[in-house]
Length: 129
Image 1 (tube, one colour):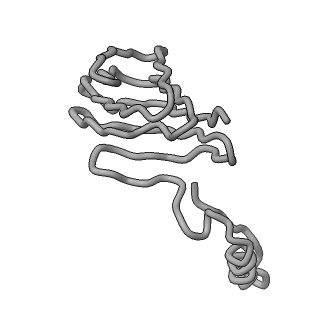
Image 2: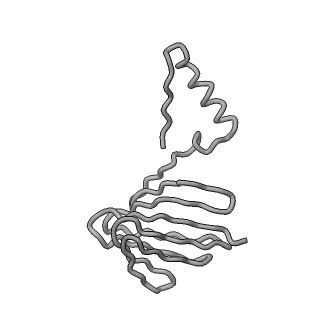
Image 3: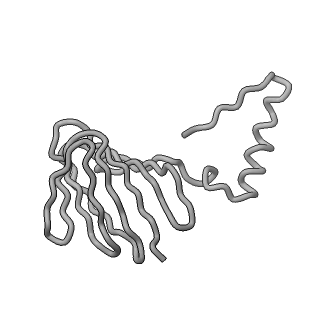
């Protein structure tokens, strides 16, 4: 998630020009960190393309964040650690490690960590148009 620059002392000043070059090219890494911290846990963007997004969500015990699937998109949530209670359109589903849930466009999703440890979820959203 962070950069490491290794060089001899004579080239260490090159860091400034590298950062300037990345900033001029408007690279996302220059303006936002890959991991965003929330009161409910963390959101780490693993990959983002024009028509898809893959992220890792870590949800703290007892936390219950809500998020919405975009228009013309499907979303799949895969539990990698812990146990979750998900609610989509007033229908609840319980998911354990290795289980998943698919959600269609424009639906509100609530994910509650019902365990004592952090809940890990891989969140995949794909545009359908």
